[in-house]
Length: 239
Image (cartoon, rainbow, N blue to C red):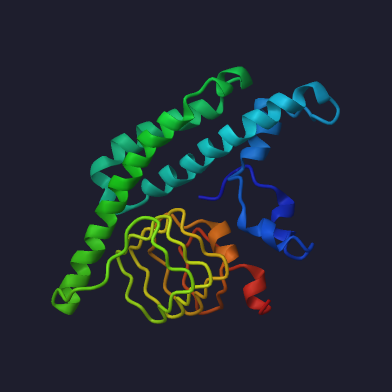
């Protein structure tokens, strides 16, 4: 699911001394704006375009983020019952990214985002329900702690925790210990992974996890990630 428009220097930011920048990703929106929306026009050579270009960018970033999540949702088997709706939303999102600058600035992106989010939430519920059914069969249906959107788990001690099918949308996991935790089927959309210990954790079948979230965390060679994501180089060198 890697975007076709990604900045080449982004992978080197940590080495260049910009560690904080590695936890931000424009999902290729910057390159889309400069290379497609403005057809390669450089605002430094045409400063009169700068103001509008900088206003277009945050809208484009939102559209590219939605495109990323919708693309992933269409790969998730439990969501097959809503593939048509997801496909339509993806096609519409991609159409919006191709609009002229003036039209992009007139978009009601908040409404579009809300509509897409409703589909992503449906996807999440379908995936997590299947994960929980598997879990129920494995442990006889024992009760587990549940979390809601935006859960405050700052510094939480969750080493080895069974978080399969957990709703961790927007959770604050800053500096939390998730080493060895099982997050298969967990919804991680928008979760804050800054300095989160995921060494040895299984995130292989988690959903809506992005590369910049992974870049912000502390993992190692035993951390299992979805096949579309890469282990950051600083994990391997122990930085």
